[in-house]
Amino acid sequence: MRVVRVQSPTEERNPATAEIDRLDTLGVLRLINAQDATVATAVGAALPELARAVELGVAALRAGGRVHYVGAGSSGRLGVMDAAEIPPTYGYPRDRFVAHLAGGGAAMTAAVEEVEDSAELGRADLAGVAGIDLVVGLAASGRTPYVGGAFEAARAVGAPTVLITANPAAPLAPDVLVCAATGPEAIAGSTRMKAGTAQKMLLHTFSTAVMIRMGRTFSNLMVDVRATNAKLRGRMLATLAEATGAAEPECRAALAAADGDLKVAITSVLAGVDPPTARRALEASGGVVRSALARLGG
Image 1: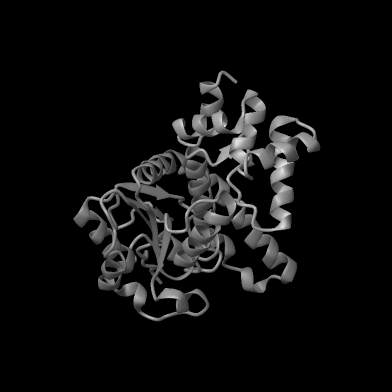
Image 2: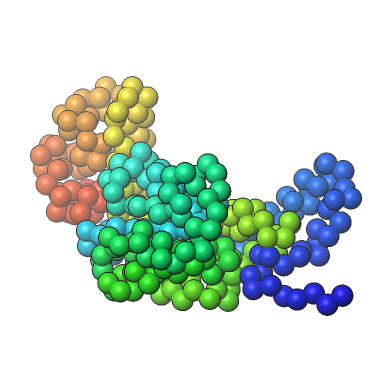
């Protein structure tokens, strides 16, 4: 029987797993794991395009705009999770990374049928997009109408678009195509597997790189954490000690003098200046600790 190639590679049958239902449990797991092991390589091949997406994200945020994640099903849920983690991890305002999931909040825990096929819904959900924003579409197949409608809304106001997909020949036409070509899934069409893993990796790498470029880290330390409980206050103290090499009593005093602002405390200790001077240097440097230290000769 002639097999007709479906539109997206993720929906094709995978010859490597054609006998998966004949294996014992450990054999099934090993075969799935072998498929998963190919994902990082596919993501690595997409990094040049992802770098372009990061630059667009940084430009949007520096201009006062927002980053919009748009998707349906598993892809959209990954966008919701990534956006939700930015504020607590990097102390970034909640309204700057916005996730749009086809079907809304109800679709986080249950499938909402047919909404992904509505380009009109995608346009409506992105009605508030601005030209200074960035719209990141998430579609393993590269053809989700909901994402296509969101792209139409973005183009209407001149906002750039990025598509994160597993389909190199994605019908949607973004400004930047970020494709991790993970190929056929272990179970044909189950894009929450390799394609979903790749999307999660690409999203987390994208948002992490954007936050690094926005100065929300110093070295590999999170320095914009807000101390909302005792655990986070302890983490801030430990981070200050890691960043400066100062003893705990000095770190406690520096944090207190900086009114609990970790970046001010780090800059103050490393540059040997008082907190007001450190704060002014940070403000003049866009909140980037290394730039503030360079400004202060530290």
